[in-house]
Image 1 (tube, rainbow, N blue to C red):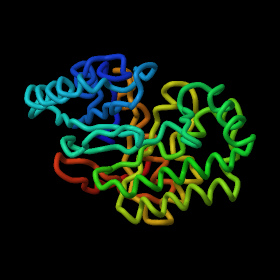
Image 2: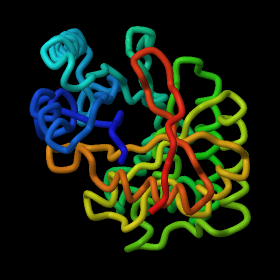
Image 3: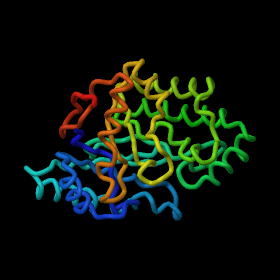
Image 4: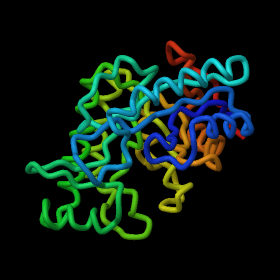
Length: 275
């Protein structure tokens, strides 16, 4: 059984519940540790309320510390961050960092891949003239840049750009060009020892029936000796441990026999046992 989830959000950013409510839910779900991964501040004045406001960061970190102490001996609580490359803040004060991309940035414009399907359609039409594979190449090239950030421990939802593809087919995620772009970024990240998460968040929210990354990319990750962790990208108390064990079975079926768990100071391997 998977006992840790490092990708969770609270009402400090775009989560629905307080941090303490999330901790209590994690305890009820049988987790032995939970990590909070607040969306770091974005360089926009308005319209970006999914990320924490800079002035709220001290309160977020103080609450994480309070919960660490209050629940010591019951569940380990970690204070992490989900860092967006458009966010320019120091990262050395967090226990760990998830590096994520929620945008395709081109020609000075930032197009969300995570907001609504019409935004994906607008991006492909306006910025790429309908060439979705060119968009994927730009997107994954930015993921490769995460390898340059030493503070990043975990690669978040690696192929998030395909979020809407089960209902609206924007990308051919099995095309040689798409896979080549993803694998090039994957190789750069593996070379810098980044850990890839298997992320079930889009399943919990009804956008997908499979986690990130896709089965094809997960198999490529295994072939290349990549490391994995398991997360639910939870935004509410009812999804703190959502399908973590099913993700572990998927990883096992792809050949993985261990996942990497944070112990407060470093990531260590834990065995995966198939059903």
